[in-house]
Image 1 (cartoon, helix red, strand yellow):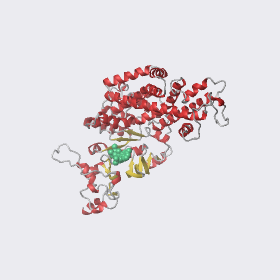
Image 2 (cartoon, helix red, strand yellow):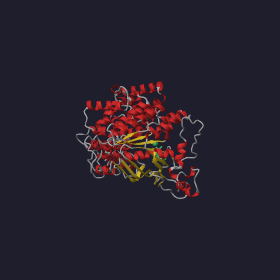
Image 3 (tube, helix red, strand yellow):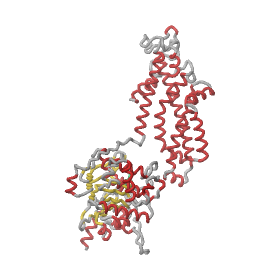
Image 4 (cartoon, helix red, strand yellow):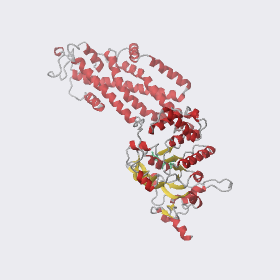
Length: 607
Ligand code: ADP
Ligand code: MG
């Protein structure tokens, strides 16, 4: 609707030079105040006999130009000020922001009026005034966003790489605040049109004989009783234009703003029913078959997770192992239904407790997440919201799925914190995330994931950011919790050392494919796939200082450059020409020991 309203007014205005219009400034005193639809004057004439249609179209151009130019200038200057204040902080920030505060202390229009009073009336000065009074708006918005971006690692990395400040501001910070600036622009432009009209209405903007919407309104005002169309026409155009621009701005904000509104909490969670019978029969918590997830890029689909099969039974803990980039996180996100464009689940089935998750409406998925699948994300630093206390976050996640009273939720939260061995739990409830250490935060993340005692817990490298002692404690905790509550665990890691401590079964992933799967003991004792062997050779063992730890030469293939045969062949010391030619299938070698290697069979024959 906004687009239609704006287009209906802006398009004719843009076309004014080519339309067969009368000169907007020619006065014909014999044709004064003709009503609309008069002979030769479609919308009538004003008190000097000038053609209103022509003046309206030309006047709209002037109003729009002033508003756009003013907003553009305000956005540019405000962005510069905001970025500089956020980047340099301290004195620069203090000076700039106090200046902005002074500007903001004056009522909006009054300030614009006084600026024009000093500079003198006229369109150029009105534009400057409008730009100036709107700088604070942009400066504050940009500063806020830039301040929080400033703390992020990629900016620290940019600084460490020796880029100049100007370069960082222009190439790192600016592109990140640009969507925000556009949204702000879109939502202010309507106001700017009104302000421009306001100044012109008071005779401080467009000067006679030039028309703009505000000055036309001002001239028509005195004739309201006798020839109301002279004022109503520009007023109507202004109204439709501003409402249209605001609607358009709101639409743009909804489209560009990442904080899309979610659906409300649904406390009436029914327990699983559709799949329950099947679950009892099948006795699996999770059954994934043929899962293929990847990215759409330049019109083609690049699979990053290929035809993965995975079964997890109640209480079982399964490790998903592979080097960075092998598709572990993507698998986890697929299971949670959190793949977003350009990502795409191409095919496969994901059954949680017997219920197919693919194609399930997102409202249903939202009820399953947290309640039946818990997720511990990789980075304990970013998995908690810095603006809420630990207690508020725990209580929120508790009350999302269960109709608990405030006090009840609070005591549940305390016992959750105690269950992840956080000492002095009731006091910790009031703590902010930044007051906790990394290990402590990861425990809170685990407590959040376990709040509803889900049947399946997915932990994506939960200990990667932690030191070794804390890692050991967190692992202990996970193991104990899973044993005590019978929770099935999918533990994602790149570290075989961790696997042996925690998991009963291991699935090794390479370039998005399962290359080997077996019980942990079997796999550690008798790894069959050359990749698994190389991975195991990278694990240091205490008491064997002389053992060399060999890195695996080469890199995993990039998504778009996958070899036709075995994906590991280019890095494999056992590879033969036939390995490069056709895809290798996963085959069973020994009980429940699956290997995707042509040479695994050779060894058996030799034995
Ligand atoms: P990891 O095993 O380290 O968790 P991921 O599952 O995060 O690996 O990534 C798997 C593959 O998908 C990698 O090759 C990565 O480059 C690719 N990938 C991840 N996110 C994107 C994205 N948004 N666009 C394109 N490729 C991606
Ligand atoms: Mg990952």
